[in-house]
Image 1 (spheres, rainbow, N blue to C red):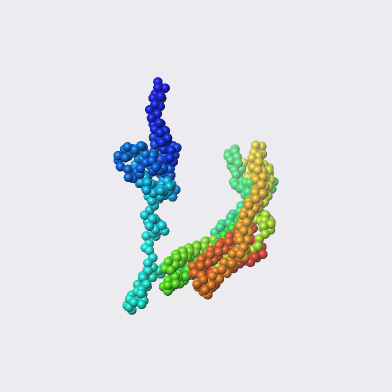
Image 2: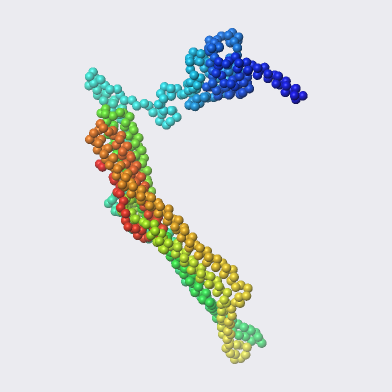
Length: 622
């Protein structure tokens, strides 16, 4: 049964296959793809036709033009190529563009009919290649109208695209104009210039750098404020006192005990024995001395922690001190840049009024001036924030702003890695603390071994015997101690030895950690020191000379250079100086980090001073 159904199905498909073969035989001149007949008979999805826009073929030699054929001709002539068969199909197709530049929008069957019909009509009258015809159709259908009229017009989606075009009043005919017309024309032009080039809104100046008359504070003064007011240092000092008290307490012997004692009261109807006693525990095997020695190590480590806290605090002050210097230097550069940009903007407006510059040129400078103002405002706030951070680092957050002594381009210490490493491994407080802990744990091991040795409990009782008359005075003596049978402090002895091993290993671990901290800090310092030296000899001096040369040439030969070149040179110089400031800041921050690791009271204890190139002022007077 299955074989019969399959044979019947094959027989029904035979006419369709034969028609396809006939199309391939009768249309040899058409450069139709080899799968065209199969596609026309519905053996492939109809949407596949739309992906072959570059394969539409013309058969003008065999068929009349489709644009001028009437209904009768269309009814009597043989089947048309793929496009006509596809158009007659009652299916909905999706037109997919073959042009990579302008994607086409999905259309329904009617839209595709119109597109294909117009394509066939144009192909009958014009000799275009198939690929050109497909691209032109896609481009014309998808390109916005505004792009056709003006390809440089901004898309409406962009902010500011609705801004009207730049228009100035027409030039007046001076020969035929009257005096009133000239006066009115001058007023119109002045009003147009005022509207086109409105005055810039002034930058809100905030006092980021105090007046020099208020005095200046140096780094030493800031460090002294930190010593007196920093809460972390006060807390570390309190921790030292805590350790000292524990050290004292650890070596104190136990107090004696006294009391009243009555024995054998009402024996033989007598009052018995009445008197007083005193008892004392005597700590043996020098256990109190060992405990005091261990506590003394804790006291020494607390002092080391106080030193470390001090170096950490002053390092943060140094860090914020140099950050403040950089922030104020950037504020000065931003202010000079803003003033120069504003003067350039006003100068260019005057050139436009005189007819020596295009009307759009001041608008470019206005944008640059606005950007310079934004940079100035940000620099002001950065300088204020830097001072507040510096004040907080000293422990006096309400410290009034003051000038700072020194410059970011001052001399920097020259540091050698080997000498820095030697000092680090010899004097760092973390290593001293780790070594002290080894000795402390040795003492605790000895103390744990001696703990099972019994302490002596001694006591004396002095009584009066009232069992007979007149009675007598008696005394008792008590002497004893714990018998270490079950508890011989075995667990604490094991734990003490394990702590000794851990403390011994922590010394090497601390050394490795400190070296791992010194390595990137020194790399940061060394890299920025070399960059600063390179900028000093290569980039900084050359850019300053280039800026001055362009400015001087503009004044001596205005026709040979435009004012925009000055602005570009000035901005390049500003960017170079800003980058140089960043390098100097990173150099000093690396120096401070090394000083914090080596725990020096003065940064120049790290090495001899090294000269640094001074930052030039960025003004038109240069």
